[in-house]
Amino acid sequence: MKDSPSMRISLALAAGVVAAPATAATLNVTIPAKSVAEYHRPYVAAWIEPAGGGQARTLAVWYDIKKKGNEPGTKWLSDLRTWWRKGGRSLKLPADGVSGATRAPGAYRIPLPADLKPGSYVVYVEAARENGGRELVSVPLTVPVRAASATGRSELGAVSVSLR
Image (cartoon, rainbow, N blue to C red):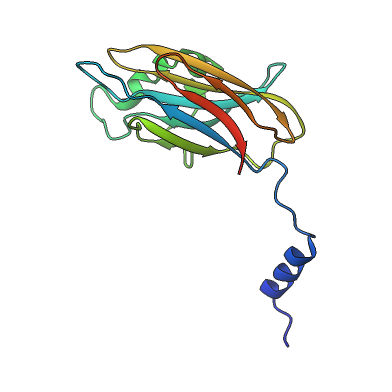
């Protein structure tokens, strides 16, 4: 039998040589349904930063990516005030793998970066909605990952980190 790269990978997986990343985890974000006369989907940003402060790393930013012209969808990203100050204003948008359209109410999963070094972090999720409110939810996170959660009060529902 000829030795192929896929055969070697299969053997390594079977032998336990190749392990899943220590941070194979997911950020779970819930956008609650609102009973209001005029509902607009919220702009949402999610990012992670070291617990003691430091460089923020954007995980996702959901905004009106199709809106162009004099008032493009990016115009209101500064309403996500905390994310905007932490690094949003310097992010070149659309950012591949990070930018996306606004989401309807429901539950969504965002993969956490697999290259996080062991330590303490804080995951933030911020939402702002036209004719609505603004909310920031933070979840403390330790790598290697252990489950953690928090709950929003108005614009966000449950926000949690779980193992994939």
